[in-house]
Image (tube, rainbow, N blue to C red; front, top):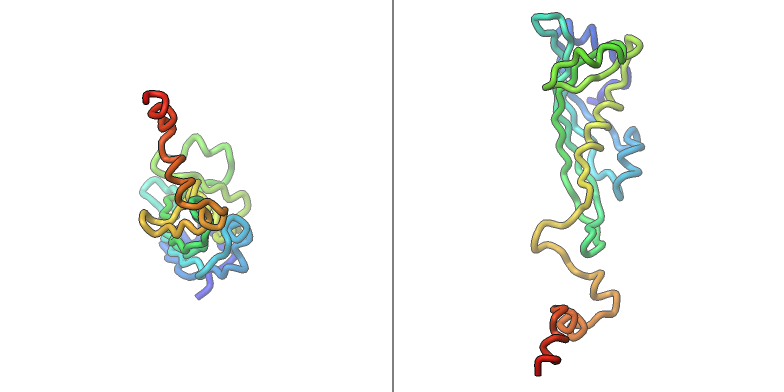
Length: 168
């Protein structure tokens, strides 16, 4: 089931609603521009609740598989991004000071909010700053295609190899 693009978080919190669904890659423009491609739909689960003080919260998890470029070998590889979040729903920026430290603020100015945007934000936050294959999985094809042969790599192994020659 597709996640709705407009919700009233206050009503959902009062009901204790659980939203589960997916977001198609076509609706993830910012994520699509940050990665090579979005491989799978983004799966999301959000539980809305109200605590004993009357504060509204949204807690959830999201996961998506994306294709990234390895910064060592420049070959593409798939990576599974997973984000968990705990948001306190507030109605204006004046209330940010009242947000508990274990939650992040979700400012909903009007009664209607877009959960797709907030979930996409959370996934963007878990994108690796620099992406690499897992250890031992790098192909090294970028080095081979650059025209460097193994003798050049051996010579460049130690920056102190020239000192060995001076010592003799």
